[in-house]
Length: 255
Image (cartoon, rainbow, N blue to C red):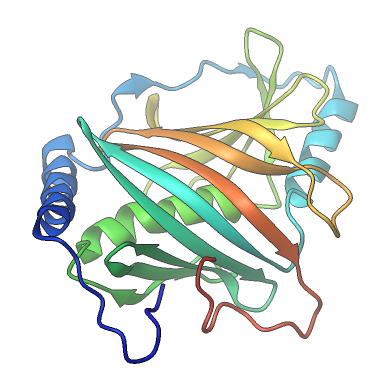
């Protein structure tokens, strides 16, 4: 957030030290974890045998219509690295033309700003000394892409032992693939898993859906993300469905 005109923003030395200490922890976690090495086995999938095409079709439709086509959201997040936690806010703007655009701020100001274009390419728009560029490119952008820019063309993957069904993405250039785990009926997305081979790289559980004005369905509004380097707890505090001529994220800041 910006301070009032003419005011000087002052921060206590202990707070600065805590934030800088967390930045060091984030970097150490990235280097120490191997960044892309999964620590848990991926879900074992029983390949689709065509037993319930209606449920698979329902899941594909639900994935394609998970979010409004154009909206702005305010988010609250807690990042945990080891025993340290970092609280931050985010402003997310989404449109069919620009893709997903996220600005992350802390009490010390802007942390990072990233964009995932409609073609899936990631751009680091602004960085700050509070967070290494590699963390923003590798992890912040991944959270943005996996949680808020799901592929609309998930293919039938199969079923889990508990009866839940799975849609899969096609293999990505790095050899990974996304899996979307739905209720057995295919009506509601519950988890997002990113795998490479038989190893899990990323798991996001949807803890809560919320109804927001202007959209007829509940929207995933609370996530619990587990990755080798960190844990992310994220919730959408507010969401506004925008019209086709509404402005994007420029000049926005969390309330």
